[in-house]
Length: 200
Image (tube, rainbow, N blue to C red; front, side, top):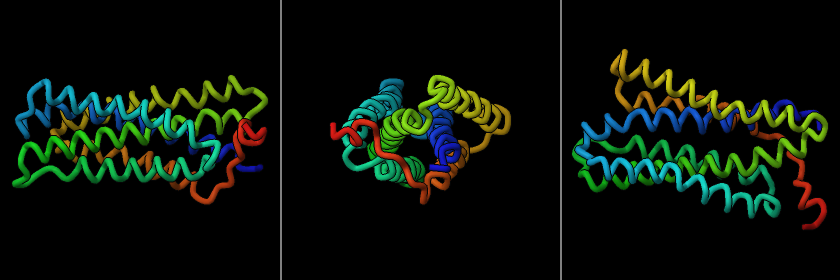
């Protein structure tokens, strides 16, 4: 195809974006508790949405990717990530606590849903692109998640504990790898999955 390395880079950036966002969102729970008066139970429920959405995303996207193609699934994942950012950045001003909770919970869930969709595309896409040295390529791909966690945690610590930057600015950092994977996937031809090529 000729664009295998670019697509690998796009998948790498997508999973790294998930790790960065996961770490940053986990790091601002104390900020949300102070600013909005959430209890530990409420914060736990918001955090839970950031996990449960992943499973729905990977299952649903995994079931439809063969039929509609990798490109459409990754486009939906990208839109989910952007929508999650909008919802997460909405709280403030005179907004009541229940509305803030709904925004943050929904933003977390959609973020995780997008992460699951990215994962559902990245694994079979890389498997189709790199039939030789597949295990080595998967090792490269899956180093992106812990790398994202490390970068997000370091950035969150620096911006929150050292520089005392507002939590919205901290969370906005996850948009950098998100926009990167969107640009890398943009206009790229992707192979059909092995299952769809065999009519399964």
